[in-house]
Length: 222
Ligand SMILES: O=C(O)CCC(=O)C(=O)O
Image (cartoon, helix red, strand yellow):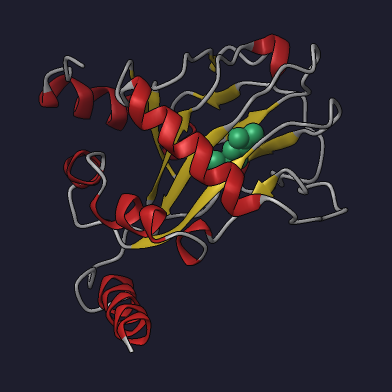
């Protein structure tokens, strides 16, 4: 992976509210995330419209805790946000049901999200879409909700984020995003980490996670 120059990444992130870094994760990394995420989510049944989303992967497999807190993307997120991101959770987003949609919404006012494509994704199978610059027009889009349909397909600032396995998108939590239906039923998985963007990274969840990891290791060695 050739990392684009930090200054241009930051300029794009500040202007659009998201950046895509192509080929960020290697094929081996993608394979490991896929295999572990499938194992960690096996047997989980949910019936609601967000049954395709499994949060809390870091509690199911320490590998995801490492990625969430220490993944190679973390220093990039810090540079783009301009401060230490505070890790919230690691998740798997699938689209197994053809009708599953995540309607246009923003996740939060502060923070950032990373989403790594684990499969090829385009309009045909419900790729992510972003509304460029919407993080700077929060009041205008504050009414949007992930469970309420809003058609922004003809909006001039809509960006269709077609991605290949290993591509990474980093977006501000305040950037409006959505994903449409999976028209062709092909497998479409994304690995995502949420960061809340507050100060106190070392004092907050990182410390809790390290303590939980240590306690687990001590229990296992008894
Ligand atoms: O993967 C998707 O379909 C939606 C992702 C999303 O809404 C998010 O990562 O916040």
